[in-house]
Image 1: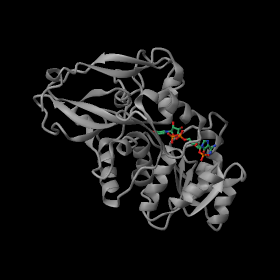
Image 2: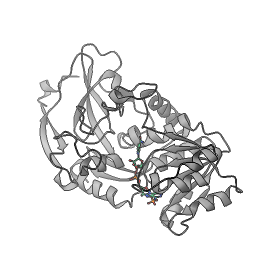
Image 3: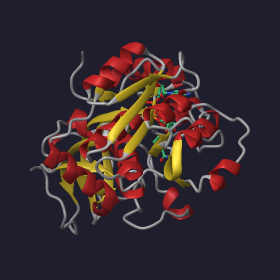
Length: 351
Ligand SMILES: NC(=O)c1ccc[n+]([C@@H]2O[C@H](COP(=O)([O-])OP(=O)(O)OC[C@H]3O[C@@H](n4cnc5c(N)ncnc54)[C@H](OP(=O)(O)O)[C@@H]3O)[C@@H](O)[C@H]2O)c1
């Protein structure tokens, strides 16, 4: 394949944060990144929005973030150029960047966290047409997924996999609770069902509860009309409680999540959608619950998840797809919280 420069492609489009706010995002021309010896140039075809990306754009993730910055961490694309020392990839390979570019296995640390994409560190994000990554910072896309579907996996998909499989070790017959119908929760229920678990899912919307049942969820609870949803879970489990809760709500939902968990059960602590509230830890030790903080996931987990997606023919649930030029509309949809699953940004097809 001829080098891009020889084809006359030297500029690309990128969405840039110069000032915080969805409507402040600026579409700019930038040079296509150059490729070092061990680097791979990827033409990105799609990305997707995570709650973190909305926070980054609005300035609530890290108000001291270095600007200008390119946001977003998810991506799927194809290799278009490789450095002279690259052995893992060749032009035409379908790839996805890993969330933290230096996290391959084991526990994360502060240095690894600094290599996460799209939060204003030295690592620009994926809301741009081309990006260069070290060859170690990529994984192959599952062969059964389109670019648009694969672009949902890097953060929400992997976080859910980490919670359900790596941390939870969910077994057939166990009960898993998911909260709401955002990106992480919908992936979590898909992985839990694939593992043979019984899934109880909550949502604020009866319409979304219907869609959850279509996805194979066993029991659903509307957490708006049934505010004591933890009691509903205890009723559904004969008073025992769930084996696992995939916790995305944070301190506003955690007390009920603990109440809904069996003695010795597992809570995967992922998100903080509900903001700050006081929290009494007594029930954590009185019930000997294991509360495990989850930080996305590393490359080995990403590869294992992709294999499971291929073998089981799993398809991410895409709420809606917006064209690259309409990213502000997509972010506003995310903010409204009317979505179900993932919101995708397609770089190719103007709608
Ligand atoms: N630790 C990590 O590595 C990591 C990785 C990814 C995400 N996260 C965090 O996980 C959380 C979810 O992320 P996401 O991308 O999946 O977000 P999202 O797609 O924006 O999820 C939004 C949905 O969450 C549900 N929700 C909101 N408040 C709720 C409540 N009080 N109880 C139950 N459900 C509630 C709503 O579902 P309904 O409309 O159905 O009610 C809402 O539509 C965020 O806090 C995010 O920052 C953390």
